[in-house]
Length: 447
Image (cartoon, rainbow, N blue to C red; front, side, top):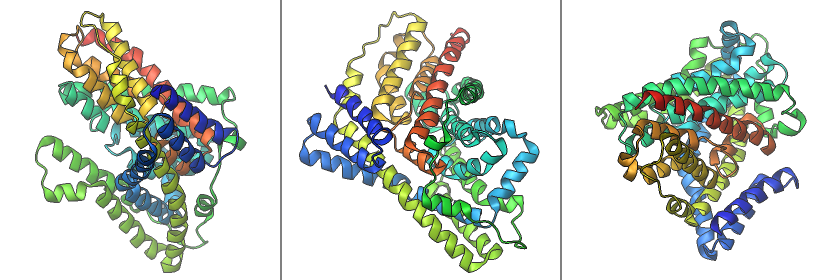
């Protein structure tokens, strides 16, 4: 019954938002209350799960969202995103921008912190959309979601990739070799398929795109005539420096040479604050103190909208966790040690996909699935790296409304809930299904 109530809550939330036009925050809280009470969590415990879930998400990503959005507002006010996009368009043809974005996020900048990636990449995607033409925002949004999560599960140092490989005792180098190849092919094919869907009428801009008032104010500001814009290097610095610090800190920890100073500057909150500080200093220089203060104020408006809906999304995840659904799903599976390789791959994929649908977190689904399979992995006639890749493929499947990332993505890209389902949920489903046969092919090599 817990699984049934979870499904009812998720479907009801989507129905209320899309069909009844209920505000997402109200719909999410109603879904939390129904799920907690109907599943037997209890009155007090349901409220505790809602508040603690909100608080936990804010503790993890609240500052990241705030610093990132404020940085974006400052960079936009001084014309930095225009500089970046113009440089990108000179190098990459407009109809190849989504592929370039997806592959860059998959391979060059796979992140332990997907939240950092979307906060930093969303303004670039929005600013680039006009160069692509029809459905440009939708295609770039889909490419952004594809790149972030394909890199997250298949490419080191993505947290999901590292965790899954570690639990199944797969050497990171081995996982990296297979994961990079599968990730590149998956990202490319997914973006191509999604473009075909857009051409066939999948996207309705009037229903799927929705700029919030605060976001519109930030993006409407244009640089006054005669005001000098930053160079490309300066424009990129507040974005690139935090990513380098975070990546170096993660690699230092993996390699075993980290220390308190490296860990401090490699912390995502510190790194992103340094990026914000750099953007603020630049804005004061290029547009002056008054314009910088105005941009800061506009960014704060946007931050408030995003924080609230993201936090309530975290509350839904906490209520689902309180129901004990993950443990229940884990107990349903008993893997036959004599199962054929293909069956083992499919079962690992299915466990991870089902857990992701229920829990709403890619990393938690992958880690839980790996924990279920790890004790009997040695008895199976399949290489552990293939099991890990199967779990990664399944954990990608259908990121949707019970994920706090879904609500961040929706708000930062300026999409309606329906638009976010048509981009993020769609591309993660496609990527999951595209990568599954690639894992089966890899099993012929990794025996």
